[in-house]
Amino acid sequence: MKATLTVLGSGTSMGVPTIGCDCAVCRSDDARDRRLRPSVLLEFADRHVLIDTTPDFREQAIRAGIRKLDAVLYTHGHADHILGLDDLRPLSFRHPGRLPLYADAHAARSLRETFGYIFDEANTYASKAQVVLNHIDDAFDLFGARIEPVRVMHGDDEIHGFRFGNAAYLTDFSDIPAASKPQLRGLDILFLDALRHKPHPTHSTVENSLKLVEELAPKRAFFTHISHDLPHEETNAGLPPHVRLAHDGLKLEFEI
Ligand SMILES: [Zn+2]
Ligand SMILES: [Zn+2]
Figure 1 (cartoon, rainbow, N blue to C red):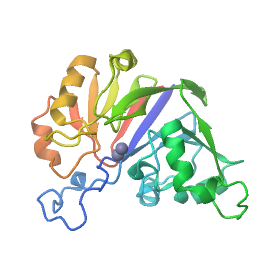
Figure 2 (figure 1 turned 135 degrees about the vertical axis):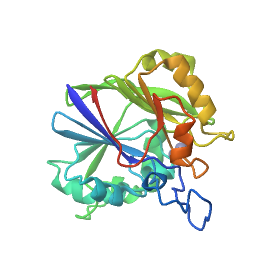
Figure 3 (figure 1 turned 180 degrees about the horizontal axis):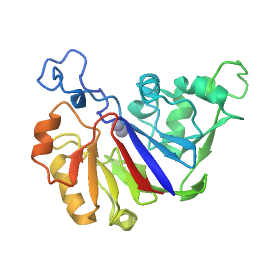
């Protein structure tokens, strides 16, 4: 079936512009150089599935006109991917029954530690987010689509990206283990982490992700989790035509 992916945020953990920074990218007039924290929205079969709740989620939801959510998938438990969970409140109140969240052990641990007041069943405060946490390890069916967690290494942490239909979204990783690569070969759309040019202990770089594009041979690749080291226009000019930096608001269609 047809599906749409909307980039809600393409920036690294501190966002771009970064608070107090006067670099050329942080002061750029190009809207594509303004990057909220990393997240995407999937739409298929009249369902709305969010990947990660960033600290910018409220602004992202309003900007994208999100009026309902049917599920949230978590890639991992770092602050830039979970801190907007409390802002699921209005959407969770509109959801019939609790809004389902899907997380692996790493993400579930962070969510429970950070948002104890939400997951504490003894706390019956009526206006807390109405959510239920489901643990995932393997592929599962979500509203008629197959969602496959893809195991990646984010520094020393084993976390997940997701493959869905002929697309995959891998936001934070420094290495893709060989065992995960068969899930990622020959896709129509592949999102990869590309923080900057300079090596980083927990993130991929433009150069490393370009090698992965060559190896995994997607029709189109998009780089995300981008820092203020990469000006949009200038960086794109140096990339092959089927590889682009993602930008906030980018919308893509694919088969799920
Ligand atoms: Zn991140
Ligand atoms: Zn992270």
